[in-house]
Image (cartoon, rainbow, N blue to C red; front, side, top):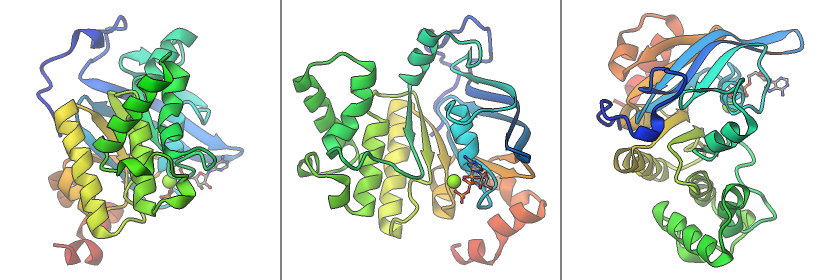
Length: 269
Ligand SMILES: Nc1ncnc2c1ncn2[C@@H]1O[C@H](COP(=O)(O)OP(=O)(O)OP(=O)(O)O)[C@@H](O)[C@H]1O
Ligand SMILES: [Mg+2]
């Protein structure tokens, strides 16, 4: 959850002089495939230490936006700054340093199927750090513990895990480098409500104890209510609204109204 936002660690001070309360700033981005425009002139700020929930109808571009921020999908216009660095002007070295500080849990293909859980968790370590095999094993053990997986999961292949265990193992990999920012694309989809609630409290704990900033795409109303400091709604190719759950409950946009105050939403109350 949101930490005191007044304290700005020294390493966050940026040469660009940007607002350091925001770990991520997206300005005027447009993304399309062929003649199909998915996102247009989209703006978004993510504040340091917050859990931001990202919602929107299926196919509105939530995953595309996340992949665009990560540099995996090209954008036509606009600017993306992470930790105060403009990604389009960052040098290769700066880019690597930024990537070292974020972790990602993708909606699909969360884990490499031919690697064990331990090897999956160690992928970012191999990519970014020069560590001995023994130290990497120790770190993987710690990450498994952090996400509540038994140690005997370490040598299992993803195909031998339950859906909930795959989500946890993917989170362990996203946390491998002790990131400042994590991107989670529907981390609780497919989990039973108890598993999803446990996953939510894990994320909330990490956020409050480690000061982690969480960017979480979700359809899970329970997650939005219980752990998100703010919610952003994607619609009409842009961020239609951003604010607290209270703000969402007061919003009169038809989609937002039916999402947060529709029959399904009210049934959970
Ligand atoms: N590589 C691609 N090439 C062409 N079209 C794409 C590509 N990736 C995504 N799209 C299209 O962009 C749109 C947005 O897709 P996206 O995966 O971001 O939706 P989403 O909001 O994440 O939906 P969901 O909630 O179902 O995950 C869809 O119409 C999709 O078909
Ligand atoms: Mg998606």
